[in-house]
Image (cartoon, rainbow, N blue to C red; front, side, top):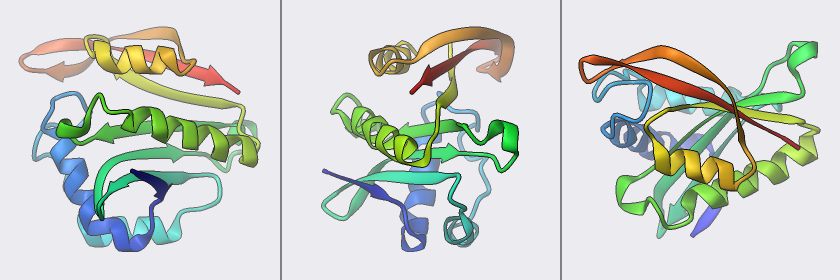
Length: 162
């Protein structure tokens, strides 16, 4: 498995992977709701500034996971990034997430990032376990944050300081 920075040429595979991951009902978008095209994603990857990064895991020329770390140009927020991560269902539990976050930590240290933050559905115990293993802590609860499967679901705010 390779972990690397995404490039514009990854846009088609990355867009398809994102749609696949959203079929899990563990992400913000419902299955089929995301309308981002490969062309839009290609432009976004090409225009991405130094304050953000998209990392991917690759196995035999196939993308198996992704991690978006989105930073801010606002001076008071330059020290932090917000993370969204997704792993192909058949690849979960194989260390893909750990590898992505370890690569993110290296990138963040090199960029002078102090804070990495994310949100996660309260019932997504495997993801919460991974994040805690990697040093994230629960900082708060977003009550009734998401409408999911005909009910409201809570999300945790989680963060890690480097």
